[in-house]
Length: 156
Ligand SMILES: [Zn+2]
Image (cartoon, rainbow, N blue to C red):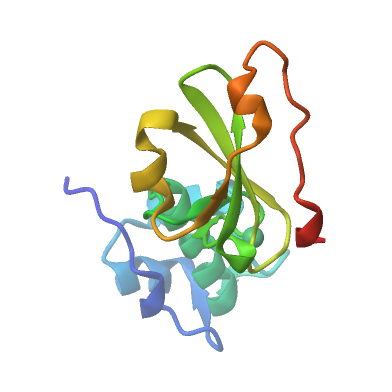
């Protein structure tokens, strides 16, 4: 069987769907839909037939898609709360060195304002960051001393 990635856009947010309708909408098996329900797709509770709200379906599939597609474009960091790659607020990131060659990028999600991180090797820093402003802390020159993860005060 071909592995399909259902397109969330096929679902209409103002409609309700039965399991069968969802299955035929995406051309998938009903058991796949039941599997989604087991994995957290919300349904109308206790009613028969079980109904799935279009907007729940869209949200569920979009989140799943983002999870399957974790690779961020240059200049993006994966936001756990948004479940999507996001651009940092103000296009600013801090590089926090973990070792001489490896570090974390830390920034603030431009959408939900939580901290977002991306592991990066120093060698790939430029290609990963794209057009972002990268702050390299002093600690980069003193790898032995573990630096406090600095939060840039002008981001506050
Ligand atoms: Zn976010």
